[in-house]
Structure formats: C-alpha cells, structure tokens
Length: 285
Image (cartoon, rainbow, N blue to C red; front, side):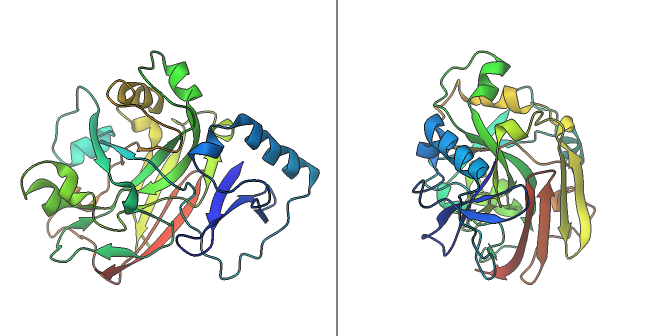
C-alpha cells in the first residue's frame, strides 16, 4: 500500500493512493498514519479489506497539500557516509561501523514544502536518501531477517545539510542537520511488502533541472537490514521512528570549487524508485 497524509500542516488526514493512482480517504477507518497504526496489524488489514472492496471514498487532489506520510514521529535516526561513492567523493575513509546521528522530528516537512536556507548559510547542500519507517518496537535485534521484519515501509527523504554548520563550527554534526525544514519526507509510505529488496532501488536528485545525484542502494556500505539491526543495539526503535539510510555520490560538497551550494530560488527535485518524487523551492529563512 501507498499510505500518505494530506491537508494543511498540522491538520493532515490519512489517505491512500490506490493502484490506479486515485487518492482515497482513510479518515473513516483510522485517525492518522502514525506508529500506532503501523504497529496494528488488524487496522492495516481493515484498510486492505476496504481497498479491495472498493468502498474507500475518493479525494480530489487539486490544491491538496501532501504532508509527511508519518505523523507523530518519535525520532529520525540518520546514517552518514553510507555509500561507497559518497565517502570517496568527500575524501573520507570507508567507515568501519555505521556513522549515526539524529535529526529532530520537527525538521520533518512535506515532500513539496518550502525548504529554508538558514540565516548566514553559504553551504546548504542536498542529499537524496531512502528512509526506513519502523513498524515494531526493536531492541537488540540479532539477524537481518529479524531487522527487516520490524520495518513497516519505506519513503523518500531529503537530508538537507548545511556543511559549514556541520563540519566547521565545532562539536558534532547536529548544527548542520537540524535547521528547520531540513527533512522533507514522502510523498508516500510504501509498505514493506511492496519493496521486496531495499538494496535494489535507484535514487536521483536534480537541482534546477540538472541531474546531480544518480545512485543505487546496492552501493550502500551498510545495507538496510544491517543498519536497522545495528541501530537497535544502541537505542530502542519504536513504531513510526524513521531511519535515513545515507546518500549516494553527487552532493555539492563533493564537487570541484566553486561548489554549487543551494540558494534561495533554487528548485530541488528528487525520487527513489517506486517510492515517489519530491519537489522543493528554496527560500531564505
């Protein structure tokens, strides 16, 4: 299933995109697309049954905003330097273990919402990523099979970053990763049964119509299952938590000088194969 949330920010309603591309209203069945729903197999079965029965009312998408596909996210866990090509382009060694950092849940916005260039920023950068959404509480997972069984689904994420704040202002990466609007998510949460192999997905990103990133999840240093298992050793993952699994080569930081960092007025478009497409216009904060 392709689950999503539509409507004004903070007042989104749950919806579903059917196989014909028709937007269907789920608000009579569930309150929201969130961790509570994703961990409730019976509720998900009711949605599937209603979809099969053809009783879900259609929604007119005209003028309807698409919000993040998951509400009430507890935490966003991010994996840095997780593609061989990206590590090479930035001149960094291949990590021996996953590089883990956190983004605040309030950085998450809709897939087509405005992204704000922070005040004083000169190095705002793009990063298309595969996002993993957790569906079952995960603690100390031991096998890859067990890890994938805890995944509710997948989505497109844009891990927007400010490189000066991230790397040159002291401390950890947090300052360059947690600026407002720095994690567009969606448009859909595609349930795990529709993504049989998360290591078989293409990722692409364009800036002002020019292709900048053209990668594939097969280039991940630490595959999705290993990432979920690894993170569960250091923190408890709850239904509705999100893991951004890293970006392929092609970011501005990895390009020759003068590096083409983002500015107000730029338009970024990105997609992950089978998971939908995002479009953001950048404006000054």
